Image 1 (tube, rainbow, N blue to C red):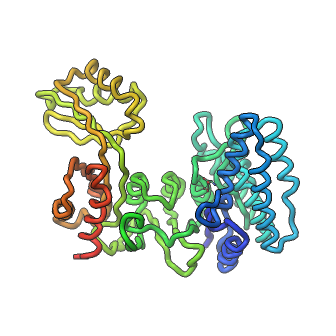
Image 2: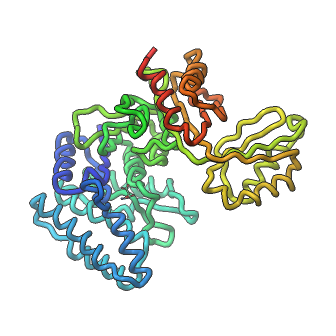
Image 3: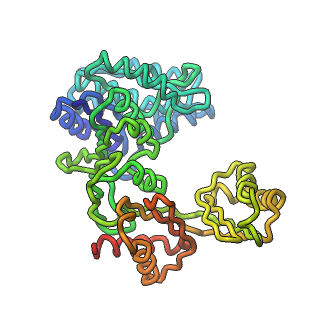
Length: 439
Ligand code: ASP
């Protein structure tokens, strides 16, 4: 039994939170590898260390003064060290970062120091070895994770290191420079470490007790999700359910390692289990609801479209030529709809429209905006009759007009398009029919 534990920024925001994390790690001797984030917000309105680091970089790159935010960063770490009662100093590390800011500021290097410094403190606090992520995580020429090399180098290194702290969020690019993942990327590091050492569990400690069936900003006190499959989670996080970085499931997915989302402030809660497959029924027909606003639907119609070979390809080529990825593509016999993100599309819309005309020669093109998409996700939907019926009657009762429906053949989710202004009402109506009435 071997566990990899990742602690998010709010779990390591100050000495008190740090101590809670330490207690959790020490309570279970199989928690052998620790992946820390940078210190996050201590209270609402506070600034994350990573954001302070980006501010330092931006100012240094613009030739402005960065000393104030840098001083704030140093004092946050010094307070943690002092609060933990450690006889430890990061002064040499601070000097190196300062030198970089002064001489040749490098964005990813600076941003990564939040995790690096926190990792140093964590290793000193636990008495674990420190492994610099830049020595064990590699990116390729395209900027993507070099999985093979990472797995090999990290696997070897961990084999010889029974207990270690590996900071999250960064690795090394192919020219040897530090490179970060996208924001929230420490989740990915935790997953890579878990995959490389074949952990039995990847515990991801954060400030909520797992995933909720719906967004608590929209639904009051939503139910918690006990178990969710990777696939369901992918659908939900893609549609905006936060908690875990959407790419964090890939490194553990093929190893069959479950992810357990846990709450540092409520360590006795079970949290949510993210698994490959399960025979555990979810408490409700649906597992979760998530959604996003601000999509556009491009409606393309042409008589006899259904018999014209290559029509769809030509339409999609117009989007590809303009470097726009499409989200959904529901179609009728003589119509085809391409759903895109409004922000990605808005500046290029006329170019796309003329490209569709040039390439596919349709009869008409219409663009509709202010579309919100809601994904109703659940492995249980396949086995249950009438799920779609219940969703649509709930929406009709809530006076929500459904503008689009898209159900993948996996029957894992149903995507519903509604007006932006109906978004919250639609989510509440769907939640109520499946969870509150719980038939
Ligand atoms: N500290 C980084 C961020 O704020 C990465 C992380 O926390 O996962 O995005």
